[in-house]
Structure formats: structure tokens, C-alpha cells
Length: 210
Image 1 (cartoon, rainbow, N blue to C red):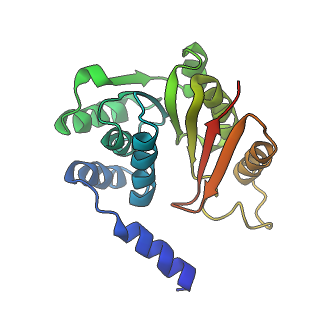
Image 2 (image 1 turned 180 degrees about the horizontal axis):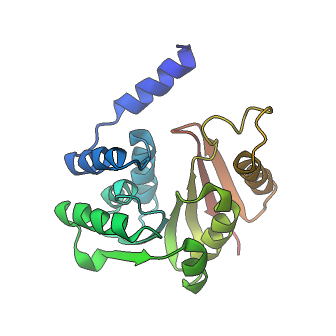
């Protein structure tokens, strides 16, 4: 294991998850869902807290791991979370309830994000988190930047896509999509961006202009 890999593992192990999040993570892995890593969760909580978020939208509910992390950073926020897998959402609802999240602060929407997002109000959210179909990531980011208010942040998981984006030999459609996204964001004047190697890449975009 290289020094960088040791540091990455240390950073992951540094995070201690709450019991309710750890249980949601364990169940996710048991049913074959890949949840965000603990360090990504800690970053989400930090950004949610730093932005004093009161209205958050999440694309990709899973079994609630990322949503619980987001609400841990912004305990007074309302979370809207979208997923096409209704059975998973019902399990996620149980984890949210068991974590003590009031029903009035949780809005679960079942359906394909590409069909749901156009109906959401623009400039209405402080924070948008994207962890869904990677082949649609550019479309989701475009929607995210429309939905987030000026000064709000869009966060994209898996931005280095399993360490393949940095490898020029990798040229599949998903890798190409993430590379195109990063290229377009780097040239955009309407956002401030940062790419972190946490997890398998976390892209953060703060909207500074409409």
C-alpha cells in the first residue's frame, strides 16, 4: 500500500459514524447498494452546516445514508430526496424515522430524476447533492445549478469514478461524461468549484451567478 493509499484509508477510518447511519450503511451493503463513504458523509455534513442549509435536495436516496449525513449537519433543514426505487425509499423512510427525523422535514419523491427535476422550483435550494445514475451526471448538474440559489452549493459524488477519470487509458462513456463535466466546470464563470479526492471524488460547485 502506497503512502497516499495509507493516508486515504486513515482519513476514512478517522470518521466515526452515528449508530443509525452505520446501520443504514450495513443494510445498504447487504442489499447491494453502494453508499457514500464515511469521509464523504462527513464532508456533506460539514458543507450543510457551513452553508446553514434550510432546504436540501438529494438525487439518489439509496437507503438514507447520505440523507442522514446531510441532516446531521443541518438538523433544521427540510430534505427532499428523489429515487426511482420505491422499495428502497420505504426502507430509507424507516431509517429516517428511527433517527428521529420529523416527517415535516422529509419529502421522499419516487420517480426517475430526469422526469422529477424539471418540475422542481428553481433557485429554491441551499444545497443539492447528486449521487445517482452516473451516465446522466451532466444533466443532473445542469438541473442542480438551476435549482440551487445564488451562493448555494451543488455536490457531486463519484467525480473521479472509481479512480478511472485520471487514467487516460480509460475511455468508457461514464468516464468520458465525468471528464466532460469537469472540463466544462473548469471553464464556467458562474460557479466556483473544487474537486476533492475524498471517496472516489467529490466535486463541489458554489453558484455565484445565474
